[in-house]
Image (cartoon, rainbow over all chains, first blue to last red; front, side, top):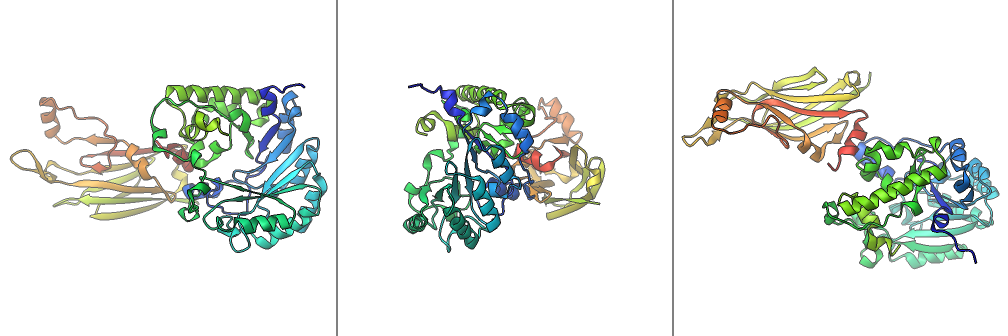
Length: 314
Length: 156
C-alpha cells in the first residue's frame, strides 16, 4: 500500500468561492455583516475562469481531485459562469453548497446535465416551509422544493444540511423525514455564529461551543496554535487565495496581519501565481501564525479556531 | 455632484459663554458656531473635497482663562468643556475609534507658563480625549475608501 504524504491529502480538495452574489440575507453571513458595518452592499465579484485555469495549471493544481464550491459571501448557483466553470474542470469532482433558492427549472436541468454521480450538491435547508426563512431570509421554499425534485431525478449525489437554531431544534426529526422522503442524505450542523440572539438554541448541546470567543483571547499571551491553513485554504471570488475562509469575515480580515502586512496578500492573487507557489506562501503564513502564537501576538481568530486543543479534535 | 454626510453629537458644559468650534475638512471650514448644551451637527459636503488622505479637525477656539473659575485651593469650580459623544461619517458610527483620535491642545497663558515653572509637563497631544477642556485641534485622519479604513481600525 502506498501511503500519501500529508501535503497530498491537504491538496486533494480545494475550497472555492466562485461568486460573492447571493439573494439571501442570512443573519450570520459575512455579506450581511459587511452591510451592517459599512452601510454599503458588498461588491459583486465573480471568479475569473481564465485566471483560475492558469492558477491550477501546475503539478499541484492538476492533482486536486475535488473542487468544493462553497461561498462565504455568495452562493455558487448565482455565479453567471457556473456551468462553464464545471465544464472547464470536468476532470475533477465537484461538491456544490447552496441554499437552493430562486434557480429556474432550466438552470437546475442544465446543472444536472454537467454533473455526474461523482459530484455532490449540499443543500443548506434549515427548516420546513414555515421556518427555513427564519435564518435563510429571502429564501423561497417553493423554488427550493422545485430544485430538490429536479435534482432528485438526476445522478448527482444529494445531501441536505440543517444548521441547528432555536426555531428548528425541535423540528429536526421532521426535517430529516422530509429530506429522506426525497432520498436525500440528511445531516445537522452546530454553529456558534448567530448574530441574532433569537436564533441561539435553547439546548447548549446544540451549540458548537469550542469555537466561541473568550475574552482571554485578546490578551497578549502565549498560545499553542496548530494552524489548519494548509488544509482549509480557499480561493475567494476576489481572486485571492486565503489561508481559510474564516479570516474573510469583515470583522477579522481588515484588522489582520494578513491584510495589513501586504507582503502576504500581494503574493496570493491567483492572477499572479499558481497553486504550487501559492501553497508555499500559505505554508509560510501557517508557520508565521504558529510563531505569533508562541510570541503572544496571534490573531484572536487563530486562537478561537486553531488553538492546539481545538485543532487536535477537528 | 455626490455628497457625503458627517454627524457630530456634542455636549457643551459652560456657565457663561457657550464654547465655539470650527469643523474643518481638508482645509475647508464646514462649520463655525457655538456649541449648545446638547448639540447635533449634521454637515453635508461635496465628495470633491475628499482626498486619498483626509483630515477632519474639530477646532475649539475662543476659550479664555475667564471661562474657568477656580477656588482658593486652585480647584476648578466652573469651566467650559465640549464633550464629543459620537461621530458618524457616511452613516457609520465611529464608535470606540473616537478614543484613538488625538487632541492637540493650545494651553492658555499665563497658566501654561506657570505650570512649566512648577515643573508640570503639559503634553502636546492627549489621547484618548473626547473632552475638549482647552482650545486646540481634535484631529481625525482617514484614507479612502472610508469603510475600509473603518474596518481596519474597528478593533484598535
